[in-house]
Structures are given as structure tokens and as C-alpha cells.
Image (cartoon, rainbow, N blue to C red; front, top):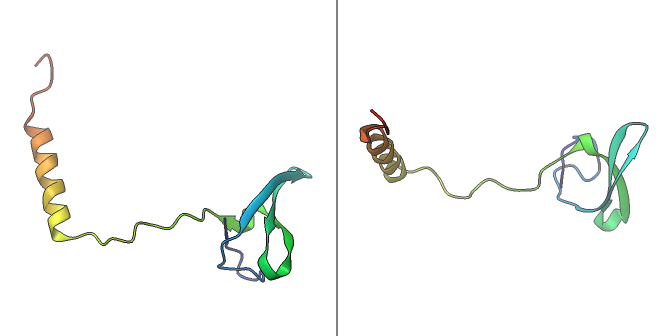
Length: 80
């Protein structure tokens, strides 16, 4: 998970989730905090660690998408 809370010492860093717990109706994550050891972070202070694809949208990709959409639009619907 990515620590997103701006004032947390691990803000902007990815941490490994070791366990998920609930206390008082709120969710918490027990994480490996590197030099901080094991830390407990409110779940609301984190976000997914997946990064967006590293490729940029190109003209060629857009042209291919437009061609695919046009081909779908030209296909007659069943029963018509």
C-alpha cells in the first residue's frame, strides 16, 4: 500500500501490509515500516500501491482505438 497521509513519516512510500484489523469501527493496517519497524496505519491514510501504466497514449494508439470503435459501429446488431 502507498501511504498517502501528508504528515505521516512514511508519506509517499510503499509499505507491505502484514495484517488488517478493525478497532472502534475503523480499519487499520499493520505494515512493515522499514526503519520504523512495524507500524499501524489507519486504512484511510493509504491508497493502492499499483502504479499506472508507464506508457503514454500515442497517436497510433488513438487511431487504432478509433478504427476499432468504427468497426463495432458498422456491425449490424442481431435481430435487426
